[in-house]
Image: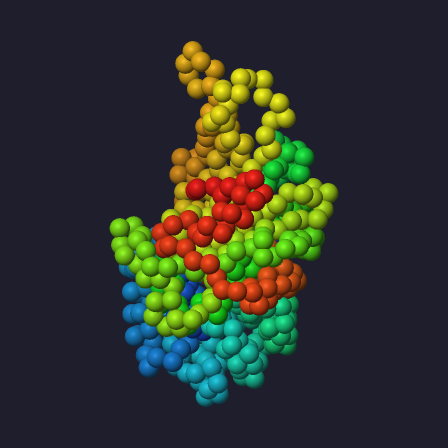
Length: 519
Ligand code: BG6
């Protein structure tokens, strides 16, 4: 493993990295002595994302030599059995190649503690394990507790951490809580959850995960907007016709019925990922990239979001029905295992929002998401107004659409600009073409997985990419009235699996004289 550089000027376990210039963020950021405890370690997220991300960080030399990983769960596993499970998860899901030497070093710090969330003896055992790792591996007493558990288990875990002294950082070290979304079910439950976590950890040691903020392409929204001079002058209601934010998935709910049913698409991803994308797209330039400056701008824009007057007209929710996807026959939502046949949970949601400020007044932001749609794609399309005058024969421009700047979040990461161009030939005909920037063609560096970035930031105590509670609250304030309206009015529409959603969503845009993009 490579040598350990600490964060600029940051004190970790009593020592300061003398090698880094605090202003230079190009040098690799390497975590200081520390460990990670994962609750919910047998879950999907831990297997597919968290443990592989830890390995990828180790493989990139970004973890300290004595790094320790503790799994907490109900299985009757020994440390070695857990390490084998972790190895299997890593070989299947890690982004970087498997290297036996890196694995061996990581595996030496892997421990497992067996217990329920209300099991006092198990939490005592966890405390003993953490203390022992400090002595044996020099974690410096620095531990992050990752709560990859359902919200209903948060209070138990948080209170146990408090009761058993695990949340108390020894002098000169830190203890942090990492909380996975969803942060509650609505505003009231989010506030309650927040109260519970704040009772145990100080605000600056609570890291709420919205993994979209860990994506390179999401961070690039701010680079695109604020490091260039050509976009900001037209990034407003005088030039922008509307904005479409799409997060389409081809997968269904898989084995996640227990989590998904009763939550639905809007709570699962609009409340967090899509509203974060909206905030980054629409906010004003922050005074700096400090967490407070970013938060201030995000809060301003989220507080200016207005719901449509008629929620029946300008929102749509729907469920997928049986269909074909990628040549495979797939079940409808109500036929999925674990879903009750009269469930009204949305697997698709589309909403129209407006932002009541000088920059955006009158520009609709259309947000849509769904499972089992045509293909997996997340993008932000800023669609511009038509040119005020076209000095061509009307027949020359029948195939000319609107200019658009499309930020391709995934999977084909990049940015596309759609512009009109003359079709070669003796006639004068103008047609849409695209100008493209693709990550693959422009950078030799590959993008880290979102969870790699976020776990590293937790270990470094670097907060800008973690939503604060005020943002979470504002997002629930936007979504709650919509959920309430849906609950009180009718049933979800339907759409065929593999299609691009319900016709009601097309009609919603058609009423405004617009149409959804076919990504
Ligand atoms: C999660 C949602 O937050 O994001 C899942 O709970 C969804 O339902 C996932 O599948 C999608 O993440 P990504 O990174 O693949 O777009």
